[in-house]
Length: 379
Image 1 (cartoon, one colour):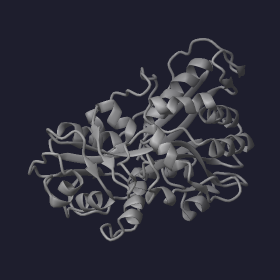
Image 2 (image 1 turned 120 degrees about the horizontal axis):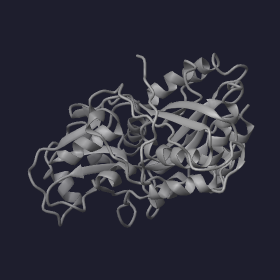
Image 3 (image 1 turned 135 degrees about the horizontal axis):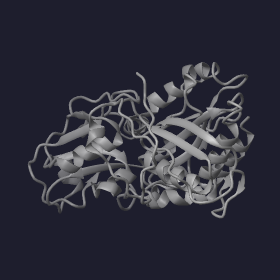
């Protein structure tokens, strides 16, 4: 499929992004960003905003819709500071982003899961003398959003979430949900569960959580393709959020930024701690801080398994980290300066500071330090 890119940066208020219902129609639809006329700066050197501009021209990228709102904010800030640059990030899915990158279409891809061994091997065809690596950049909670009249403080746990998305719990007044919400008035409304239609790192991360924290109730291996029984599908995180927003009795999963932008109520998660954990940037950061780097060489892929069964106070257990996938060596000489400059900004303190207000979680300091070093080493 030939994917089109368009020009014209959309106006954006950080943390609030217009979500179009048209995104629900197809997994191949695009949601592109590119530059408007920047304000003032120099093509190279530090701008008045503190962003170090290096390189000119256009940088193409695509992939994860989970980081769309963060990427929108970063692109707007970078292009405003760096005259003569266009960062075109086409929102599709993690799977499509990796495909585009390995076909040599894009300078980097966004993915909510690390490269699989076969994908890393394939990347060597476009990374001359090098390989594709995983660079963590965006952290955040996967919110369980719901739309249920009269219920505003819902608590769920791993088992009930697994059963809901596997069609084992089909009514909102099911005894398992009642047990977690003894003071709530739960209606007998049928549960309308929405999941991702396209292959998604968001699905992969959610099912990693379910397969670890509720293994008996989620008998499927984690995967980017949704494997649960029943339910309804929608394209991209924005599509799932749109369906939950407009459907009474609905429940779905998406990044917190989509819940925030659409004013969707999110469930708290009972983990065994003294109180259920709310989906917030700070609570997600508490979980991600326990992640371990398991990649080798320049690769910084993370193991998040310790967050799934955490009982630490205020630690939200359903998290994801979106990686920017780039070549460690063999990047195109024509775009390498701009690639490093842009990723240097996104990994910087200023870039990471934008994440909390957009519903994401900044990288913990230890991981962020490693990311900045890796970006500097790209060649």
